[in-house]
Structures are given as structure tokens and as C-alpha cells.
Length: 422
Image (cartoon, rainbow, N blue to C red; front, side, top):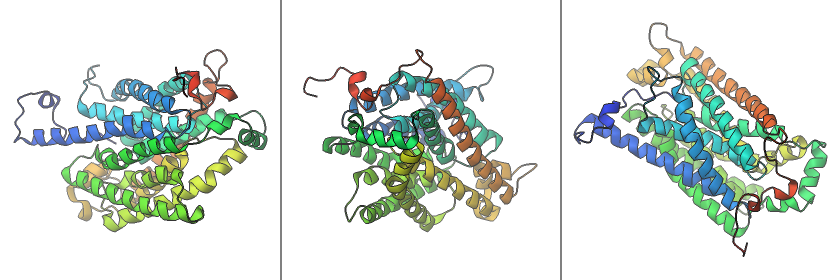
């Protein structure tokens, strides 16, 4: 997700007298739209999506606000370590957008750990994950020079598998089968589920994410043509994933719709198309990507998540593996295929902005670029899971961080003053 080459100068962005007829003004307006749309996703979309738990809504919204606010500040520093000039960090809307996007990584991890990681553990994990995530992003975009404009590899897949790595570290010391059976039978996990009103508020998050996802995927595109393709392809993929999710949900849920699938799988098309949304995939290709994402996500929620919890003891409260992890891998695989198909007669001068390593003094071939896309995907998953597991074990150090007891999990009473009628 490299910085946009046609971004107006910092001076022009700060100039109150910038002419409305100038190209810089048009770019500035376009950046403002992208920034605000992504900003809404982070603070409203992610926040409300995680309010589905019956007694954890305060934490879902409040900790989402706290974590995002912390990570935005920390990410500005971490991301600019690789790019600052003369030791000076200049903050623009573009750098804020990049920090917002990085905060999505941490919030995805938050979704995996929702309810069973304490607030102090989450804050520690957010600081560590931001450092590792920014390093991985730099490796993907600047070292490997992989195409990932929507962040399906470096943001979605990374956040999901970092969270699962932490969850792996948090497994019960008992045998996984015994722990899973106990987690179903004890009174505590009865809070690990929705009620009617909490599912309704979670749908607010889904709708906001659905509406603004094209802004997220197109946020770091570098030309009007790329921006248009990213918006159109994301929109079509989301629409296809939504229809598919309803159909598959009714098939696996005895002719009824499952709200878990509606809240989450309908968004999987936005993740799945992220790495390729600015490429020439065509309307039919975007629809096909969305259909595949909807099928993958619903089946993951229905079959895979329960098996991982039962046989591996790895909890995933929001099912981020099904919304962000597997669709992120799916998008990474598609980026390999479309990189190998990329030709100059198709992309023209855009080839150098989308695949910068394929032009210049020592250009890569399309097949070699595909191998670098594969390397970016593998490195991201390994670094995320291993980094998450290590960070998870560190966050369990006795007396350093508060650990939730079984009767404190999925319960707002631990951190919040609650109304008397709750």
C-alpha cells in the first residue's frame, strides 16, 4: 500500500487559498472523501459490529474507541520511521489515512479476542502489533513491492492471524477437548452470545462498513482510473457476497437466515477483492470474487470456527478468520494470478504504479511478480501468527497484566460503571 505519487504537496494541502480549479484541489477533495469514509469505518463500523455480545457492548464501543485512538498516534510514528526525511515527521491527511488503516489491523485482532482478553492486555497487544504490523507492511510494499492496495494481505490477513496467534497462546492448559466442553457447559460462556437488541446494534456496524468499504479499498490508489476501478469492483463484490451469504446461510441453517452470517459474511466481498480491486478484473470478475467470498465465509462460520474451538482450543469471538483471514488469503491468491496475467498492453503506463517492480532498469516479469505476491502472503501469515503467539504469551506474565477470570469474561462489569437496571 505505497503512498500515492500524485498526492499534492504538503504546502498545497495546508494552503487556505488553494484554487478550486487546480488539480491539487481535486486531489485534496478526493483524499478528504477517502479519509472520512475510512474514519467512519474505524470508529462506527468496527465499534458497532462488535456489540453483538449481550453484556459487552460498553467494552465493544469504548475499547474500540480507545484502541483506535492509541494506534492512530502510534502508527504515525511507526510508519514514518521508514519514510521520514531529516528526522522530521510531517503529518498530512494522507498519513492520517495510513494510520487509520493500520488501526483496522488492531481492531480485527480485537474482534478475535473480544470478551476474553482484559483491557490492559489489549492495550499491550495493540502497541506490539502496531510495531510488527508496520514492519510487515513495509516488507510487503517496499521490499517485496507487492500489490495490495486494499490491504487484504497486510491489514486483514495480518490482523486476523495475529489475533488467532494470541488466542492460541491463551488456550486453556487442560486438554483442548475438555476445555471446549467445559466452555460450553459452564455458566460463564452463556454471556458469549447475542440477544435480540445487541444483534440489531451490531447490524448498524455492518451497514456502515458495507457502505464505506469502497472508500477503504480505494483510499491509497494513485490515479483516477485506479480509484474508479477500486470503487466499482469493491461495490460489485460486496453486492455479490451479500446475496450469496443470504443464500448459503439459508441452505446451512434449515431455510432460515443466521444473523452471524448476515452481520459478517456479507462484508467478505470487500476483503476478498481488496488486493486486486484496482486491477483490470472486470465487472464479472468482481462479482465472481464476491460470490466465492460469501460461500467461503458462511461455510467458515458454520463449520470451521466451532471445530477450531473444539479441537484446538483457539477461540475467535467475532470469527475474524472467516471475515478477514480466509478472504484475505483468497485475495492474496487472486493477486498472484492477476499479477502473472498483467501485461503492459492492458495497463499501459499504469503498470508502473500498480506493479512498480515490473518497470525500470531491472523489471520483473509477470511470473516473478506473482512469486513476490506469494511471498508477501506467506510472510504476512507467518509473521502475524508467530508474532501474535509471542505477544500473547508475554501478555500473560503474572502481575504485569490483569488476566480475566472465567466469571469475568464477556462481562462489562469488570471495567465499567453500569446502570442499575443492567
